[in-house]
Image 1 (cartoon, rainbow, N blue to C red):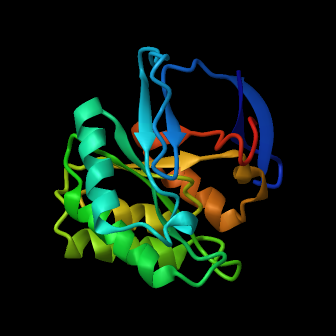
Image 2: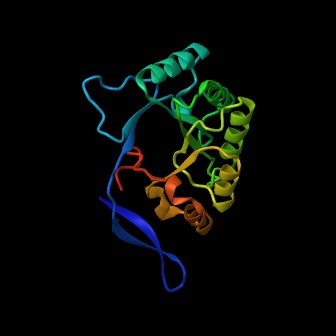
Length: 208
């Protein structure tokens, strides 16, 4: 497997190069509350995540959320992906309520895979990242609940903001990195190596 890495060119601009990567684990995500296949056993290092994609939460109720969280706890699944997507739609208030409920019910046994996507005028996702931080604080989500920001497109200041919260935060970087601005690339460089995750977001983006 190859990973697009960032190196320094003559003009101090990012240059893509292939670097061998050993895959040691991963996360298989099932959205819309669907149930993962029962005839498959995850390989060591792999986890299963089940959630409601933020653009598909119009009919999601408190009962749906509580049932999904209970299934995740019972089966050792991760919650996700859940979050905020301000690119399209008009149900943002309901998106925030759903995410707030997941934040309220999350425990260290149920890490959250967070889909936080800003509008086209907000490519770094500043607004959903800030809204999510507020919801976590309002719900008093324990600091030790692991959070996976998928995908992370923010700059260096956002990396610092999340680290300063004291929360256990992991940052996912996908093939979208080839379209990142300089500020976003600086954000990737600021991520601690033990908090950096590489993702395909397949089949939405395909395997890079």
